[in-house]
Length: 307
Image 1 (cartoon, rainbow, N blue to C red):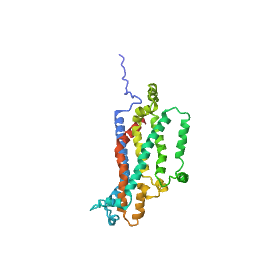
Image 2: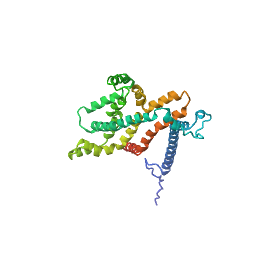
Image 3: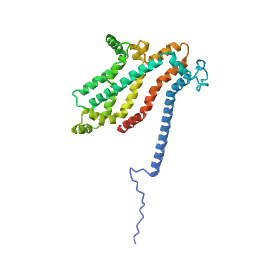
Image 4: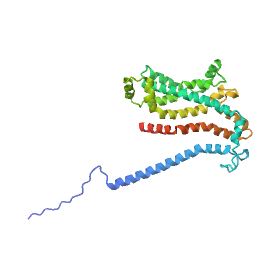
């Protein structure tokens, strides 16, 4: 009677499939790496925030000190008692109120009209059929590459010839025609808006101003808010333009008034007075940021979604 020998069998290995244990180890390794990277990023962001906030904290602390306590070692971060009278002295030490009014006139006029101009320009360069618009846009971008020191003397001579020196007009009129960086940013933002929306509105009989007001403007409102804050900060804190064109005390902007504080009172080591004036100059920028912070967050979120 024939007998059959047992043939040894081995378990089949499926190629390309990892065992569960290997996958679990890899997931644990990825989680450890991800958590380590998150900790490093968090520490770096905390250091960056500390570096940014430390000068502001020193400025606020100094504005509430006496002259004798400014350079005490170790530093006294919370002054006791707080010299709130420094915020009363700044209004008597110089034309601070006049500087705030002049800076407000320049900033609000430029931001209001210039933002409208920039938005319409961005819409035209992105959605309207204009012959040679790309070449015109590149030429405008080329103007950004010209350094401002190369333009200071020609522009000063131009404004001097037409009698605008020692007035606010050289600071206002150029900004009424828009901001090239805002035009560039909004144009790139609008390039992601489908042309079918614009074409459908045109077919329905809408004009370009109606399309811009009812379709485009709600879409780019977060981007406008982000650029508006940056432009307002640049206009409000501008020092180079006013020091070139403004001489009389009654037309000086806030930054020139604070610079005069620095020239007058730094010699007397009255740094609390200077820091108190700087805190007052900071408040409008902080207020604009708090007013538009929701739109800024929406702009960042929408930009991330588009990416």
